[in-house]
Length: 224
Image 1 (cartoon, rainbow, N blue to C red):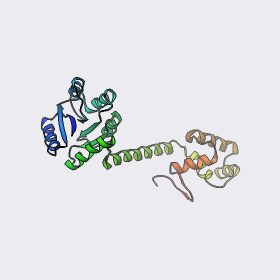
Image 2: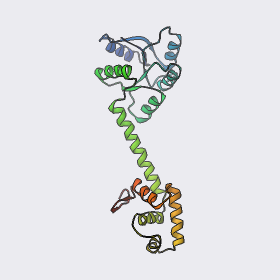
Image 3: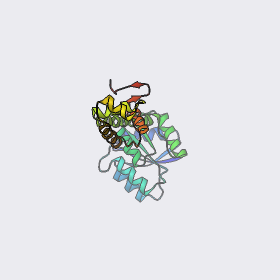
Image 4: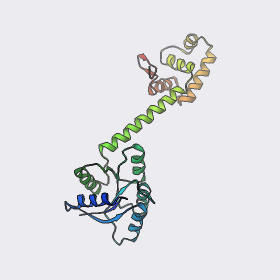
């Protein structure tokens, strides 16, 4: 039997979770808390710690994120599972970063909750497809934002230099195409090196591909 300490500021929700989990005979709620501070105090006074903690995020006095972080530091052997109404990246990330081994939404099915708690006990963690998708979506959005920032940080002449660098033109030919002196082209090169971190013309091409400025065989401006 898996022994659980449950923390949620709504008594009805605690009672519902208790009834749901204990009905199958595989789980036992050994303590209930209405906030994170009560949960920590309960664990500090307990002679026998629970096998697992299930904690809400939004609670008064001390929220679930703070509580899980403290539990993970003081009692790392106790896995914590987040239970929340919030499905946004910020709360998911903060709870996992604090040490939560799983993240469940309050409208999840009984089967999913039971399976998740069992897997946490057996394998140490269980991150559902929902959580993974949220993390990947954020990663994608972050990269797109970084790409746009890098693109916007380039001047029109630097973009033109990058485009021409992705061809077989020599530096002199690039200067001719841009109607500037080779020394001016060297200035564009040095500026692009600085902004991109590239150290060679090949590096400039790789940078152009990374930010979507150049697709081999196809000149491309993001968003157009």
